[in-house]
Image 1: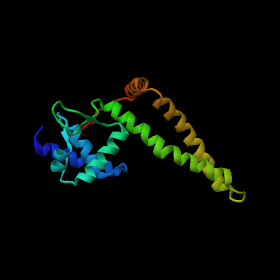
Image 2: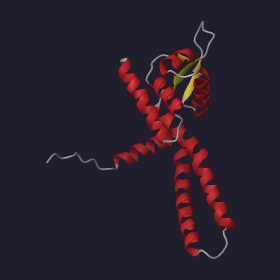
Image 3: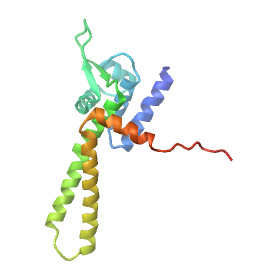
Image 4: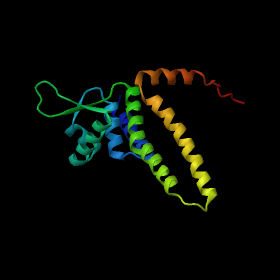
Amino acid sequence: MDADTRTEFVESWGSMGVMWGINRSMARIHALLLATKEPLGLEEITDELGMSRGNASMCLKDLRHWGVVRRVNLTGERRDFYIAEDDPWSMLFRIASQRKKREFDPAVTALQKVLATAGEGDDLVRERLEDLEEMLRAMDRLLQRFLANEGASRGMLKFLSAQIPYRAKRED
């Protein structure tokens, strides 16, 4: 991959990460590692992306915590090197698991607390919140089943995607 194409990918992935609520620097480092065959050290990452060592180090720590980047040792090298998860499915599965735990579950808990402490008097609001909780509980059951086993989820997604009819766009 030529340098311009890689830079375009890194910047696009960074922009997409921001839309998903992920730090731009973190998304850019992840993209660089996805688009690079060899493990990269902190210096290569900061030079390529023009960011501070501290920022890059914190982002790498977060990416490792999410399970989408690994630290590796190279023979004869004293410094750390980093590589992206090889399997895109595993990467997306880990991200989905973390996002459920960090974002979805607390939102459901907060909604349940509101319903538990809600007083009488505003039946419309209470009904709306109960309907929302019912939907979120159904989604939670689906997510729990989906995230229970990475291999089974991969098979389930392949099956479901094969059920969606494909229609070629017709040119008029």
